[in-house]
Amino acid sequence: MNASVTVNPDTGQPAQIGQVIWVNGPVVRARGSQHVGMLEVVEVGDEHLVGEVIGLERDVMTIQVYEETSGLRPGAPVRGTRLPLSVELGPGLLQSIFDGIQRPLPVLELRSGAFIGRGIKSTPLYRKQKWAFTPRVEVGDVVQGGTPLGIVSETPLIEHRIMVPPEVSGKLAWVAPPGEYTIEEPIARLAPASSPHGEKGVTESREWELTMLQRWPVRRPRPYQRRLPPAELLVTGQRVLDTFFPLAKGGAAAIPGGFGAGKTITQHQIARWSDADVIVYVGCGERGNEMTEVLQEFPHLTDPHSGRPLMERTILIANTSNMPVAAREASIYTGITLAEYYRDMGYHVALMADSTSRWAEALREISGRLEEMPAEEGYPAYLAARLAEFYERAGHVITLNETHGSVSVIGAVSPPGGDFSEPVTQHTSRFIRCFWALDKALASARHFPAINWLDSYSEYVDEVADWWGKQGQEDWHTLREQALEILQRESRLGQVVKLVGPDALPDDQRLILETARLLREGFLQQNALDEVDSYASIEKQMRMLQIILHFHDRAKRVIAKGCPIVILHDLPIVNTIVRMKTTVSNKQLALIDEERKALDTQMDQVEKDYS
Image (cartoon, rainbow, N blue to C red):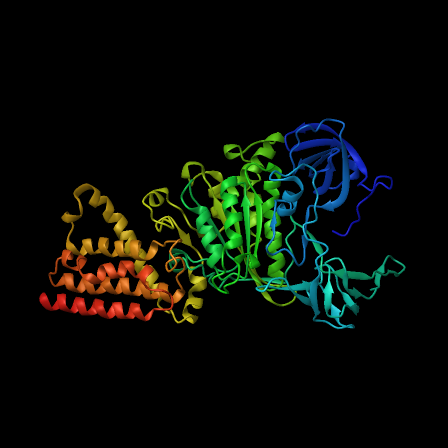
């Protein structure tokens, strides 16, 4: 990570280490492998295209190039950097928009227009901006990897904690006084540390000069002390997710669904409303118009928890389908490394990857050009290993500085034709514990979010039960099970209804259909564009569920006394229950209690008529 770049003294450019001998799209082969290491970043051709060494065989290196290779020909020079593919870490990450290899897109647009020119280089973080640094350590303190040296107010929402790099430790010889510094100016210096070296006890000394800028290889997970079991709900404000299929902080979830089923808008809702401290949104190979919408919308969204712009706690990584395919493969590693960096400060981070199917297609294309033996549907045999490697970087951990932090990963999957049996969906389901299955039929019926309650599942239910209890919602587990059972019974009755119609069913079974309708239309359906309905607090979710199931319990008693279901269906309170999601705000929960009293009053009258 700290290796210096070999530079040609005459040109000031990285020294040439080889020559191109073969070009196939983003995959290039060159002679000179004895001068490079695996996963080293190199510059290819006279335009200095950025690439990464992905294979070494005898004297030939295989390089995947992260830029367009049109016009590249055999004989073009290859220059080494002696550095792995890394990201820059420091103040200035939030509110930024990067491409898959962390080039700042607004800067590239200023230099080359709407389409990124080849070989254009720009530092990910702006070097000239000064940041107000407040130290939190003193001279003489012994520090190690992860120790906070001081803080910078990166945005009004996030305090950036400047940490000692993970592999550095020692005693502080100097600390910068409070003031404004650029990310390259020194803010601390560690005294030279002697360590035994060799048989004769010879010692070597090294003084570390620390700045606010760090680098970290994207394919290497950042270290932590130990992993904790996920036990706290990631509150999204989406009723079908929080109440029925919860995701714990530090967990991993997948949102599979066909075109138009609502993957992107579901991720937008989670990004906007979740109680994560930092959001990292990776647009990986999605259509340009979809990503343009994200880039245009996010800067204007307001964080509902603080009233500040949402971008003040957001990082966007955009790698659309018309951008170089190899950079798409790198983008999710770039995103998860940035997420781990904020996790190490003690924040809860939510990472959205939209979509891992496009990332898998990039793997497939590069694998095909490498002439590797294909596995299922042409994907490489290591697809499952790469997916596992990515999702395993989610987790709730104790960081190196003894704080708690987490990275929650929500990956969208785009199976062709909505076929969940295809390899990416199947392999993904092995490595995640929360499966939010989108249903094209529900989307066509304008039921959003179109998450199918029969195909979806969460394995975090037992882990977050204690969290619900601490919120004063001890009956959450019981109510959830009761509601899901009603929905499952409705599904079984639906087969009979298709054959003979609902009128042929006895009233107790028609009550199941009626309660399921209330659950579907009054609880599960949620309008992302409605000011009141877009976000439902935990308290509102439980009050809504309680009144629907209370209606079911009261209706069962009345039907047992001979009341026909038609009478109950026509009660005024039924429409009130369906509409309460948009008529009762999160601050007006007393209105739901009033509706419950009205329900009891109307049910008492019906019960009296049939007693």
